[in-house]
Each structure stands twice: as C-alpha cells, then as structure tokens.
Length: 201
Image (cartoon, rainbow, N blue to C red; front, side, top):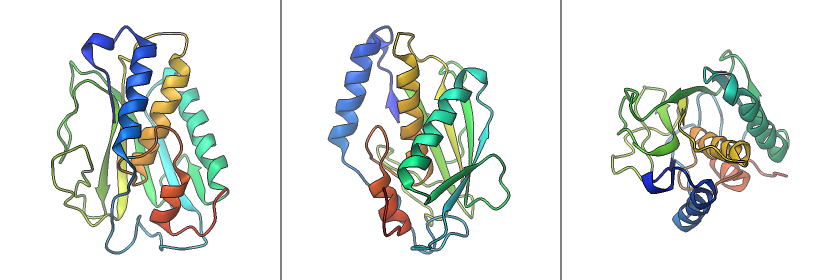
C-alpha cells in the first residue's frame, strides 16, 4: 500500500522517493496458504494463473491498468494470464477508485487513510486475508478468490503522474495475487515461489 503524507501531496518527486525507501526497507513476502494458493489453482501446476480484472476505475486509469497488466504478463513468461471476465478465473480482481473524504466500507480491513492505493484480499470462504503493515490477523486460508484494488483519486499531479500510476497498480496487483511486503514494481520471483512456478523469465 502506498501512503501519501499530507505534507508531500504537492511534491511528486519527494513522494516517489519516500515510497521507494519505505517499500525497499520492508522486505518481501507472500500470504501463506493451507491448501491451494488461489481458487482452483494447484500449486506447481503447469497451467497459467488466470486473473480476471473487472475495471470500474474510469477512463483516467484504464490505459495505466492495461500497461501494468501487460508488464506482469510479459515478465511471467506465460505463467500469468489476465482476462476481462470472471469465468474460469482463479482470482477475480475488481479495480475501484475512492477518495479519503468518502472512505469505502471494507469487510475485514481497516481503511488506510492517506494511501495512494491499497488492496483487499479474500479467500474462498470470504474471509479477509490481512497482510503487513495491517495489525489485524491474517485470518484466512490463503486460497485467494476475490480481491479489490482501490486507487486514490487524489494522486498528486506532475509530469511523472503516469509512471507513478503504473508503479502503484503494479504494486497493488502484486498484493491482489498474494504478495505482502514486496518490491514497488514487478516481483515475479516471489509470485513464482507462492504458486510453485518452476521457471520464470
């Protein structure tokens, strides 16, 4: 999850630097699971992980979302397939926008006011899979079924806004697929460990 400190909301460069330092210092990891890592996905399967992206974010985010999905697909070397409909998907991700002044109702999560974006993850029983830095317990099987990516409409403007939006979505997509503390961009190696992929590009 990216945080937008109030004193930096107008300073895009300082914000980007702060985000990179915070994430780099946090280490990497993934949500543990007791059976399957995602709905209907067998650990170590030769089948690709199928992720449905239901985009309700609006036109200002659509191109950025497509760019981030393509980067993940390219880096995963056929192990990851994004699709526009939930039929046959292992994970269904709904992408939404919000404002801090109109906080969304989150089942099983504390609203992270001031974040640039965040993800909520649920298992096959609908239980929230909390992950650091949340202080709430994990409380789920780890079999990821549905997730939501929430994108803050109040991202500070600047010449690099598109690059920052791509980085934000890459990061939140990682959470939606089960990564906890992870790199700000792609983290295919940790995804490969979580899903039992034997090779990755």
